[in-house]
Length: 360
Image (cartoon, rainbow, N blue to C red; front, side, top):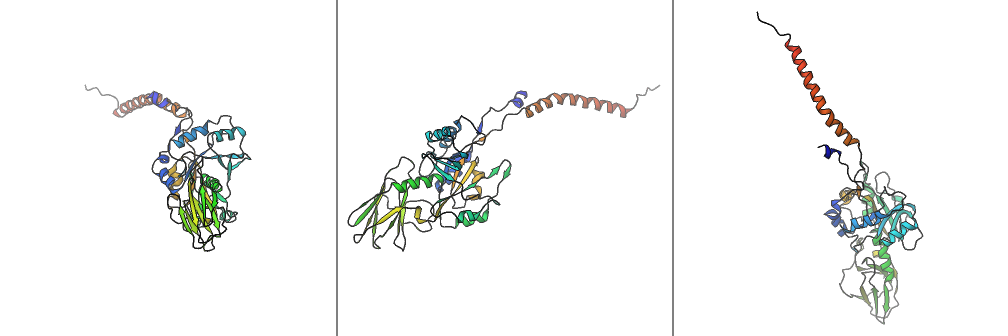
């Protein structure tokens, strides 16, 4: 018993989040969420960046990073400039998307800036979202717990966001969609135009092009799967096409596939990369310091909003001698106290029985 109460946890032990790889994590992955990594608050200023590979191994061993790729590419870095050593370690570990209070001019990385405020009740700011430049990514943030305090979401903001003409996306999906869109090539013949999206070395994320001046009687054929048309209400990334009455056509093409437009007569088609489905903006919420998927996601399970979950393994509390010393004190004091109680009880019994009487 003495050994058990004085045993201390090993320094550096971590707790597993069973919800990450079971039930909740897979459900969110299928719905379109992303899983990345978070610099632990305990890291501080250090020359050792082992936590990068440790988080990647922990995450990759339990769940894919996205519907579009297995390996995580998003990493939440501390506020301010990112040191050269830190950037090298991140890049060598496959992380190329960083944010959301960080700064770097390193062309190897895309920096996501926190520009939409929080979804926390009392801290949200809808005007930040409404004033964002059209066509860009709006990144909000969320944390479900600070120490022992649960954080409440802003229900009105979440309901309002859920009904806007925004593309609900994630850090990595936004970045790889841009790369995919810019990679699409075009080949024009007399009565047809073929758009091809080559295979990429990163995630298998579809790209989108906006095509103008298309014949109203055009035909369309995919190279492989014949994808269903997109609707204006489609706000989660998927392959397909959508035509507007103005003559614009939005094509979202997966890597390794192509789509051909057949015209009734020769036309000069113009095209350019576009945000998915011609929507106004991309919106994502970064779940910072996510240590428990159930706690972090439970308020949003029925929401169409998509999250970039930045995973941080929760550390076992630091070893302390307070409880072991208290246990030892109790073990030592208990028999002494019991002995005193017994002695006191005997003395009490003698006092109430009175002096012994001798019968003549």
